[in-house]
Amino acid sequence: MASKNQSGFHLVAIVLVILVLSIAGVTAWRVFKGNSKNQPTTANQTASTAGTSGKINQIDTAKLDFDQKTAATDPIGDKNGPFYHDVHTASSTDGVSFSGGATQILNHASVPDAIKLPSGQLVIYAVDGAQRSKSGILVAASNDQGKTWSAGSMQLSSSRTGGVADPQVTLSDSGQLRLFYIAFSGPPIPGQPPTSVNKVYSATSSDGINFTEEQGVRFEYGQITDPDIIKIGGAWFMYAAQGARQIYATSKDGSSFSYKGITRQKGSVSKTVALPSGGYRQFYCANGISSSTTTDGINWVDEGVNLTAAAGKIICDPSPVQLDDNSWLMIYKLALPNQ
Image (tube, rainbow, N blue to C red; front, side, top):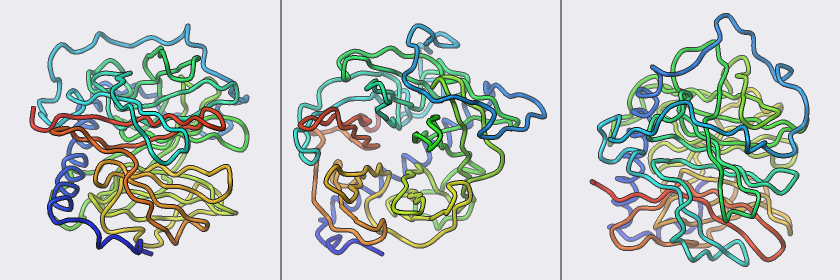
């Protein structure tokens, strides 16, 4: 069901949002193709949640290291690609209005997703734009509430060939990390109706570094990117971007999702979080970073803009984490278009 206040967008803002999100889709596919040559696989592996056992408390940062040296130049040749993206943070006291977004924590990285582990450690998974990670995904951890970070390569054991992109991490009921990501069947075509079908896979980990891919496909649909997964009530919801449009699917078990409908026509690439007072807030790319709230995952009330970009810059891929009762940290991508 679409949000009530989407008509408030100015024409110029709408064009910019569609352009940015179309570029993001093409970029993600190029990253996937670029990383697929270096993807480590395990032949004839049968992967399942039981493949990695044990609950995670925090990542051992002493074990974080990159597979390869940082590329000195753009390895993909895409001027709008992740080599030219950086991961930044902004802060908030209420989880709604964010500011101070001048702190860069990762360079040559894109599509960040963050989680707070039981120990309080903050962890980010992001697309690696400089070919430091053979899996295509890097992992970074902070033990001081985001002031300093240690980073390295995420390792993925999979029977498939090909790289992955657009990571989104959750903490499973069993206490493991469960990472969702996209595998692309073909490049998105800006301005064209969805034709190719992209697939969402998942993998589990008990140490936050080494992941084992689960069997099967979680969800597949035309030209989707950037999965956003959360449990609301007794159902799992997956939100996914189709350019500027946001769709959603649901699942009873978190393993097989079915398409349900359109969340909003303009405003996608989201992260949905549970609120301490009840309900849920979804942050997404629109006029910078905006948000809406829901109690059921279907009907939404728009809140407006949470964080605006500086002149000449693009911000997207929001991922907020609550540090304590009066402190939030927004982790997001910052890019300079057309380098």
